[in-house]
Length: 316
Ligand code: ATP
Image (cartoon, rainbow, N blue to C red; front, side):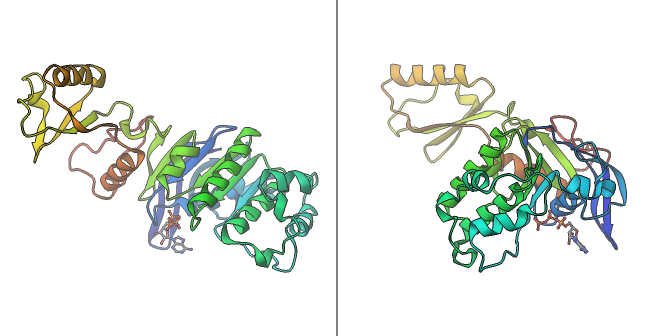
């Protein structure tokens, strides 16, 4: 799936201002971005349910604006809200949707995949929110799609239901399906996505694996600890990097192995216990917040993306 220079306006609102990204076959790809960034518009264009004003789009080798039924039969879509018939059972619902596809998957297989085996005879109206969402996914799987769109698949779930949905998504990836999901949960993107794109203000500001996006892989490691009041001062080699506030010391380093060796070596030598010792890298959330903040409030002068794994942002 590929988007190049994708543009869309609603009257005076420029929702997409040149969106570029690529989703490779068999990967789980997450589209992230604040409210109004253009995620839903992008996804609807890829699904063939919204027209674009400009740019190139390819989905399974076809232009979704002209793909028609041939394309729709090869994709599965899970919207944020669906209207399933409350009086049908789970199995009856799946059976009903099977009629729409030339080569549907057997109901039992879909029930198993979506983790709904125990609920096959339960009426839809009696399902919990999380169970209903799983049924939405199951309905999208009935046509055995090659590509699945999941719009905020776990919004409103309790932690256990989220883990359950993650398992379902992982099993889809295990079957070689390509999955495009939108989410506001960065831990979800971190846990599921092979790659993510961050949309902000109608543009992709970064694209790459969650562990590397926004320069995360190269970013400084932060080492924090509390120095007891009776401890001797930190050695000169460490102290210039240190920021101490009320006994809490923070060191930043590009070479954490060496720093930790020097620090803990010094601490052991002087019998100092480094309380609450913590080594951390910027989280996906830290990087995401920084990227979207920069997009909303670009620095003056050089506005190049400091992070973009593939040059991300284009001429602004
Ligand atoms: P959210 O996270 O809130 O779902 P989003 O990233 O999906 O947001 P979009 O729904 O694509 O964002 O909206 C992008 C912009 O386009 C927003 O400014 C929105 O107000 C506007 N917009 C979306 N749909 C329409 C529409 N049908 N008519 C007019 N403006 C629209």
